[in-house]
Image (tube, rainbow, N blue to C red; front, side):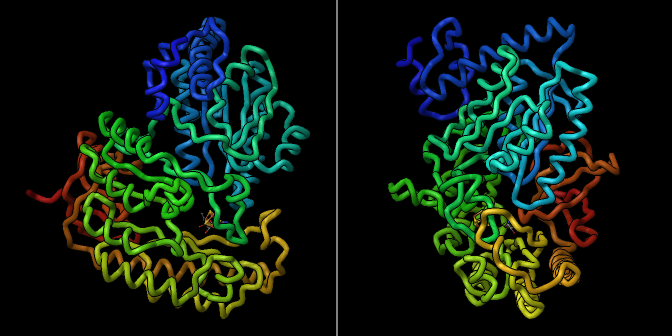
Length: 496
Ligand code: 5AD
Ligand code: SF4
């Protein structure tokens, strides 16, 4: 193998068919992680062809995703590898290869995985050649892995968040060497994004800009399962964005647990504001979104870049978690009620056309009804366009797990409903203000209930359904927002 010829493509950090062609599978397994992934992908192609001739049909594969946008992006890579190897992707869990990409941020996600896994075991009984795999955040907790190995022995493959890039190798080994693999790493030795990737929507893609989180909010398991913050090289990110634009992508979502910490660990002066400006200036890219910023690090430079780049979406998701300074302190959020309000008011003033949405946790240990009053006060004052509201879920190993609760479960339920009602009221009020206006929207998909309607997304992330056909999908169109239905609108295409 001529590694000199291969180096430039590895440095670009994105998947290349040329690299895959250049791999020599008769030679030894390469040591370099990227070359090794290509080597095994080439082997997987041979393996899937062999499987196809044994089955007398194309083998099928199913990827089930739980959790956040970053998991969704990882799943695109899993299905990218499977499809490139020669599997036919399906949403049917009775597939020949089934993988659950898990989330552990709240307990109900964990429970859903175990329920699904039990059913998958029955599918395997009627298709003994079936392979079942698990990956993602839940696998980073040894108690989960032990439980799976003990109670679900039919699982063939388990890996975590730090070694997704070994997937092509694991796939080969479970099929060709008939191994059972459980391989969990406790940190990421490198950022490796050079994997083939499927896109759910041809016109939109997520792009990882960093891994991990260093904030250690006391309720949150993420820093333990996703590791320390690690920023990706900006040139590599821009190279991926350019390749996606050339492939028809119009909307990019920059992904990270804490995007406005981007660059701090690189020590070369690169900032998130600088990066997003460059992404927005990339030819062919019409819209740029980002998920998720932390209120503590939301600087004036970012506000200024959003203001001066109309292609950056008019939507800021700003997780508040609580409106009570006492609770925020116990959560280790490192801002106060007043500090959050000051930032939200600044965004409202400087970026008046931006929607502001948030995440809220109800029932954090020690939280009282008076604390929830503070949360409701902030919701009303900021007037969030939308909010995701969660009941606190105790996560083993986090500092908050040993803090006592003040409210009972019923009281928490009642407080949750009170918060939800307030959020729904402010969201509706905010949406109603836009009724009658004309805006740009990206036509995303045909409406599932009414095939005469196309579902479109405004720059501010609100949804509008307009009469139209499939030919609109992937285009940015001007729409009039005719009728407001709380979180969404019915509209029409505006005359030029
Ligand atoms: N319990 C409930 N909600 C949580 N989140 C994170 N950890 C927990 C937990 N232990 C919520 C936060 C975060 C969102 C992604 O999930 O609101 O912003
Ligand atoms: Fe979790 Fe806090 Fe990090 Fe977000 S910032 S991932 S809530 S620790």
